[in-house]
Amino acid sequence: MPSVPELFEQFNKINVLVVGDVMIDRYLTGSVDRISPEAPVPIVSLKRAEDRLGGAANVALNLSALGATPYLCSAIGDDAAADVFMRLLPEAALPLAGIVRMAGRVTTVKTRVMAGPQHLLRIDEEEARYLWPSEEEKLWQKVSELLETKNIGAILFQDYNKGVLTPGLIGRIIEAGQKKGIPITVDPKDRHFWAYRGVTLFKPNLKEIQHQVDFSLEPRLASLMEADRYIRERLGNTYTMITLSDKGIFLSAAVGEAQVYPTQPRQIVDVCGAGDTVIGVATLALASGLPPEQLALLSNLAGGQVCERVGVAPVNKAQLQAEYTEMEKKEKGNTADATEY
View 1 (tube, rainbow, N blue to C red):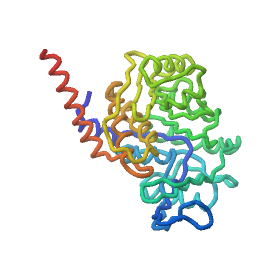
View 2: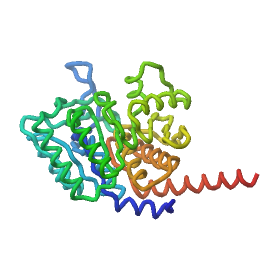
View 3: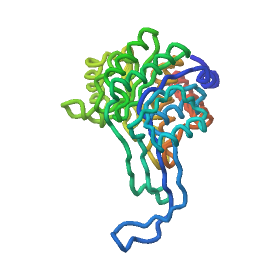
View 4: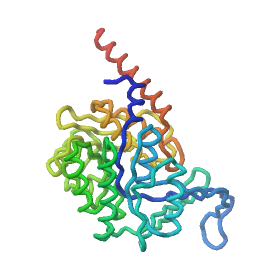
């Protein structure tokens, strides 16, 4: 296994194809000093408005923050929000090549009204219909071109149930990736939960799995292993990663033990975007050949880190490397103590 500096340097050489639903996360932030006389609601004195890349675009931001090169493939509308999105991508040094603008489609915008760090309200503008066959073909052509012209080291599906990932598109991309021997990772949602057959790593959260099975689940190893068996029978995936919020991460491999990896103590401020960070880091760890326990440790640390900040934000590479180095030292120390006795 590479040293920690070598591992993080290795991330810089990985190209990841990210396919899924993109959106704008808009933040209207102000202060609240009084209640409206018109209704029992707070009056927000607006101080700042900010647009950030969200959804699959936030996954791409996390990959880029770690040094990898993400190629983002998605469909947006031909509206004012799409103009904002196309401006934000180059500002974040993300390529535009895989984005298709489609007339008549609504670009997803999630507007959060904040009073300081307090989340008061969210307003969603979106259209969750499936891509039409002609639109799906346009997006597939972008995906196919990138698979042929770039040295893609991993394919990542980020599904938000907004209609970009159709069953047909999912199947074509998985087949193309399998033919090239490219590892494929998935952060699924309800609508296409069972469409990702044969992928390398499948990463739902506990709530998403509970919606798909007819037995009760708990964040305990025995219960999670039952869910893992059920998923493998349907999908034939190599790794199952289940995020458990403050309980950590469950990870099992086709060969090896299943285990729950607890989170590290942190001051949790906002969980928005943590799943995007976890799947991005897990994908790079997988593409780098990390063993399961190290993959889980790195993903856990990254997911916890972004929960310490308000709003959707990418991981900090230097902080993650420092925390990972410290955890590695502790694990080696524990192993040495066990050997001594």
